[in-house]
Length: 74
Image (tube, rainbow, N blue to C red; front, top):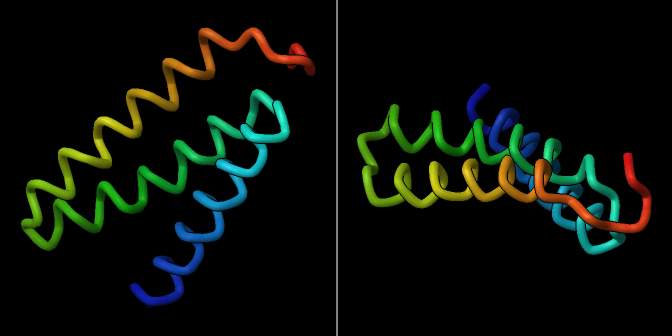
């Protein structure tokens, strides 16, 4: 089950990143969900450096979403 969830997180992160590149504001939220899964996995494994990295990514995704000044204005 963890493998399936891991691939789902991978897909969400890549999709979210791609959406941001294409100037779609909601890409940050998709990416946020993906990094949220990775954050949980890292914490469950006790991998604290990776947990910290994904926690920072979570904050950056929220920051990007709320500071958005892109083309689509959604």
